[in-house]
Amino acid sequence: AQSVSQHNHHVILSEAASLELGCNYSYGGTVNLFWYVQYPGQHLQLLLKYFSGDPLVKGIKGFEAEFIKSKFSFNLRKPSVQWSDTAEYFCAVNENNNQGGKLIFGQGTELSVKP
Amino acid sequence: KAGVTQTPRYLIKTRGQQVTLSCSPISGHRSVSWYQQTPGQGLQFLFEYFSETQRNKGNFPGRFSGRQFSNSRSEMNVSTLELGDSALYLCASSLRGTVTDTQYFGPGTRLTVL
Image (cartoon, rainbow over all chains, first blue to last red; front, side):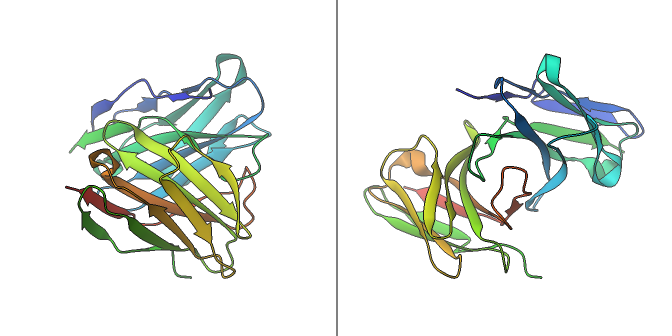
């Protein structure tokens, strides 16, 4: 069965540190990849997504992610985090052979940024 | 544009009861997906509806069901509640319901089963 793994459950960084959150998926076919973020007390919202083209995708708030097909990975990066980036981050996959909105999520990574 | 709305926001039920949760998608969105979020299992896909038809289904027992109305509003029902059904139930809508579509999430309904 298709699955998504996020390697870090909780990451603690100081402001201005660089961030990289790992995400690996298990499906060998064509997939569409998403990173969602859930700020404290807010809804899940999309950070960025990849479905074709340039494997380096840029999202909101300075986030970017790189799709590496050979490694089945879609890691999220930000060069310099801010206190306001404190949130839970979810990687998700939707297979191309699905008919529509069936996202498979990773377990999530909680990011705490110390001011 | 108003976002995805879910009602009620909080529910407390006892084992054996049934519950119905409601989701109103963003205006014009035709696909509605439901997810269960728990600390132990994370976010798990329940089912997706498009044009009043269930298109995808996750690995949940038949006690979990749903439907979609002609105005795209959706309801999910859980019968014979169990303690393990305590969770945050999230609804998400997307415009065309394609695999590349962004899903927009609502605030969720927090269900507690006693």
